[in-house]
Length: 136
Image (tube, rainbow, N blue to C red; front, side, top):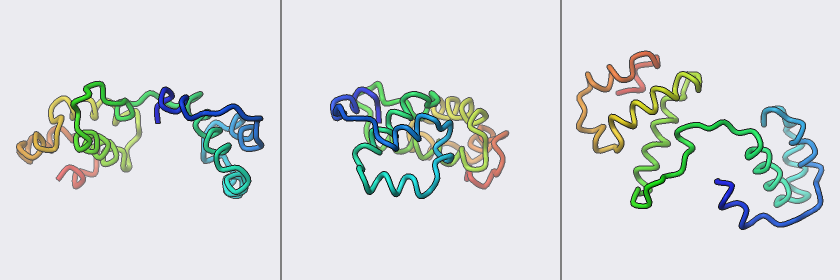
């Protein structure tokens, strides 16, 4: 969710226990399992705000997270872009995927473009990401 969209729904509130814990974390996986459940039950909206603030403060800029700049871009094109990133990220480090993702989406920006590519072209573009079965 973008910061711009979220600001319209954010309301002023006192800091919560969840916000205090999240501000000290470097990774969401550092949060104890019971912590999220406890604070979600106490004040789900506060936990939601705290998580979104934590994300805004430290998220990485990744090409598949960028919102569409073309208002004509259809939801299915966006879904395809996210799907491509998810497939590439399976068993592959994010830093390696970024370059491949940008190249892939430049070459095949829609699922229809990909469908028209030969298996050989797809395999060639996938080379270096490993687990070649994912490219089929």
